[in-house]
Amino acid sequence: MTCVATLISNPAAPSLDAAAIDRARGALPSAQAPIWLDPGVAADIPFTGDGANTQAKDQRALAERIRAALAGAPIDVVLQGAAGRRKQLFLADMDSTMIGQECIDELADFVGVKQEVAAITERAMRGEIEFAPALRERVALLKGLPASVADKVIAERIHLTPGARTLVATLRKNGTYTCLVTGGFTLFTHRVAAMIGFDENRANTLVVDAGGRLTGDVAEPIFGREGKLATLIELTQRLGIAPEATLVAGDGANDIAMIEAAGLGVAYRAKPNVAKAAAARIDYGDLTALLYAQGYRREEFVSEHAR
Image 1 (cartoon, one colour):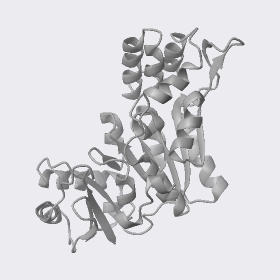
Image 2 (tube, rainbow, N blue to C red; image 1 turned 120 degrees about the vertical axis):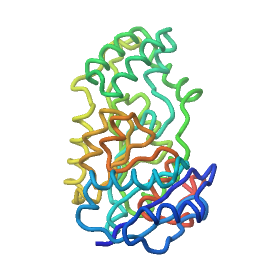
Image 3 (cartoon, rainbow, N blue to C red; image 1 turned 45 degrees about the vertical axis):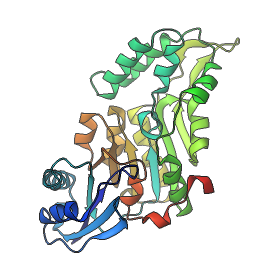
Image 4 (cartoon, rainbow, N blue to C red; image 1 turned 60 degrees about the vertical axis):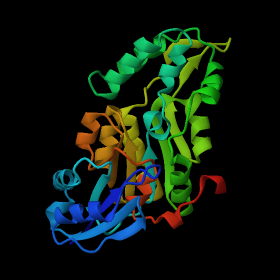
């Protein structure tokens, strides 16, 4: 069957050249001529594989062989079957994926416990501790904080990951339904989703008292690993989309289930256990890498200024 290896570098520092492509082709079975998606940034290399090459385990092994051939060059490698690359449903994590921060850590800074909360966040995202109890523990430390602080955090501390708006705008122009799914909070997701352009969003709700302050509680049930996977399943059924026509991106342990269930599950600058579980990973590129992985050419991108 026809497969494709997509080589992607960061558009802010293009590093893909003919020599790198030749090294990658040498590691692929029956590699064909490369197709540039964006000169210096991304290219497809079609190759002939068998059914095993489309299995996640074999994709990862072959991708590692290509990375070894690239000898440490800052180039991402995504392998998949050539058919059905453009997806119809996109689910993405928010914190440290679509934005560069962990919102709960920034809230914690306002009550002087950022270091403590950030340490718990890191352990939860690495899968070292269960997400739900870790979330409850962190939220309890925010008790008494005015909910309005979220406005200040968004205005002064939250930065969209490069390529976020372009990714979502391009997908939506091409008919893909987009949903932001996060173990974070609706105080942030409603606005971040609107800033980026998502169709909808799912998150946890912080309980706020009559005076507008956080009670230290989070509404149950907690939206985490199971909720993200359930959202993927729900939306595929609601929209009549086949599971293989789905794209998912995330970086933490509570993203693994939805990443493994997606047609193309991508670990984006992810924790080691997430990168190990995902069929594809992006370590160097910005979020437009998810467009190149679907075969989009640079001229097909929708500029974030055109939204």
